[in-house]
Image (tube, rainbow, N blue to C red; front, top):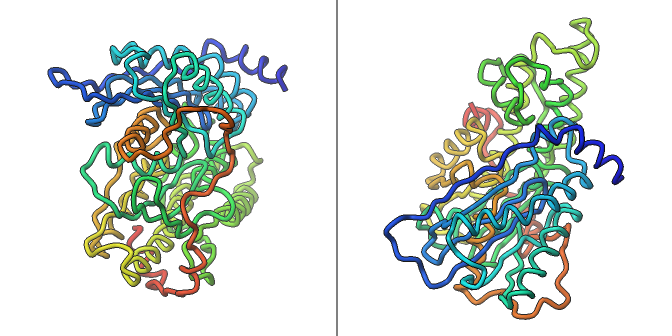
Length: 414
């Protein structure tokens, strides 16, 4: 495996994504007393940031592995691990340098320890434990999904409770955030995540060869082509219609799409790997189907929360994760929120994808609440799989809440 990683990295060495630097330190404002360094390595991006108690991002850095994985057709865990190892020290130093903060000034170090790719999580945890033990700093282990859910409280003044929809390449779930580290899980994907499905469909359509999609990630390419496609030219059966719960499923939908693509290739007389003449229509239909499925399950979550009074009237729906950057899906969710008197809030796109800022902010939240701040790192382990909060999905299903018919749902997504 190491020979594979070395081979891939040598061939792509000069084409790696450059450092993304930014500092959101607000000049002229006095820093809060407590400062947290956040470190993120749960998947394929190495991120670090320093955030203060007032929510000021004093310095951040990110090494993006997208270009490497685009060229290999997907994330190879051992390659991601090696890139994290090569870049984590520089990323952390970059964030600290941009912030003007020394390790000695930090109140704590917060690091993603669950869930994620085991090899990637291990790099971040190993580096962080070495850092906190060397400088005798408190350590705050972070749940990746909790960090995504709470990022909105960095960018907006939002009190608990609120409904959270997390949609990304690795996760898809609905939960009620009742407090820091206090979540009720309403439903989640029973197989793959929507971002993963969109990436796989993009690979099946060979969108890397499409002249309009050069350098785009799979989901972004689908979104781009769908803008000028006709979603009505391909009808896809939506998953889980018979289940009155808030769970999601995307693998069956993916199989339907792959079969439809194969049929279209036969009709056009082309081989797999060539670009379909109707590729934009396929992209539009796929994106629409994903949006409708997400809306339908989120609709039920809203009705459940209203019926059970888990959320107050005029509640807020927070949408985060990489797929939240898809403007078509976001607009559909806005329509859904408006129809149910919910406010819709999304972090800015750069904070929807994995980054060190959200980890540092989660550290601040936990530091203020006095939750999970460790002064001994003995026995700390990473967890590739980890549920978020208390799972009440069976209770949701038992309530058997009916949502409006597909015709109305499709209208919300159009």
